[in-house]
Length: 265
Image 1 (spheres, rainbow, N blue to C red):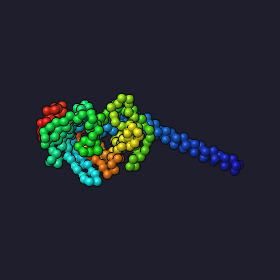
Image 2: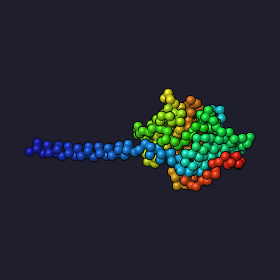
Image 3: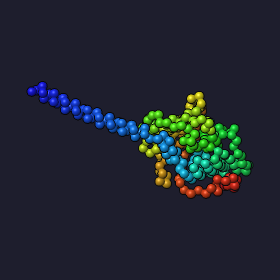
């Protein structure tokens, strides 16, 4: 009788353990499918839209830091999608009035002191923009990731203790891009960018960008600080601090014109 009761108890315990195992397995599978069933293109689009929107108008402070100096510029910027942008330097005084205009894949630079307009040729696309760790090419190909790259979720990792999708971006054939590979981490809960790493065609990391200081601006959650680090120059970095940004508001096409570029301050 004692042996029979002991066997019954064992069977009950086994049943409970099996139920718990099945429940935990289903829970893990559900979490896995929720994470990996997300479409990589949709994730990247949401992350890019969080910092760009359909249209945007705001003020940004850019700080360039090296071992020799620190230089800051305050700028006002307007965007329409991926195709048009106007960036006007407001300070310091010696650079106030300088402008950058982007229309499609073309960029013009206006220098207020000499009242000259320069169209940036293809040979200068990889040169520094305003002395920063960003290039002219960054402005041209900004937010065209889903168009120029194949995207694939390859892992789920923690960045600063936040769960993130790690997405691999591989250039499409004949895509007009300079990177051989890009890795992009996007936060799960809010679909905001966390980290981007840029690799050359030889597989060497050239630079990386960290997004932090999440704030709400005019009802939209976004990272307000973007820091670009130059791997080849460890003592060199560029910080973009978004002071204010208003998204999806009406912006006149007249702003993005050659006449506006040379209109002065």
